[in-house]
Length: 144
Image (cartoon, rainbow, N blue to C red; front, top):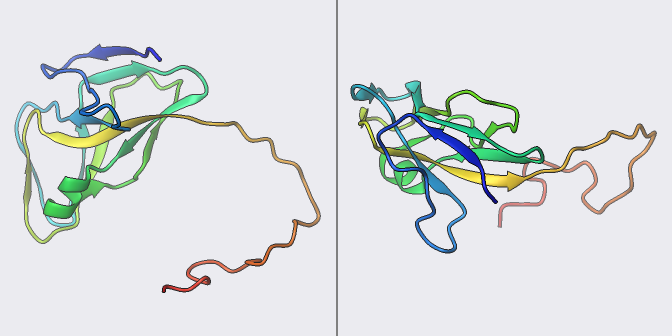
């Protein structure tokens, strides 16, 4: 699949690191470092603008290493970029650690996954089919 992209950063285009990678890293395009305080959040711009085909979305997801090692994640994970959005891709980062996190220009801050999606059509109903689970949710199937 080919996707139109405008890159207003000085960084390489996002790319797959391995043949089996689902996501491509997004890099910060900032003029000066950002200090993200504990429990702080900020929108970090990337300098990227894309044109997705209808029927696809781009999902902005956390980088697992950043989350595990630094406690920094994408607040609305996964963030959705719709096919009709033409603005700059921004990443909402949150610091859930107890230490400041410094974001530098060019730092890999999130990953982008391109995904096909379906459009649903609601059909009004009086009842739903029965299942073994039924209305059980929020841990109703146990923890072990």
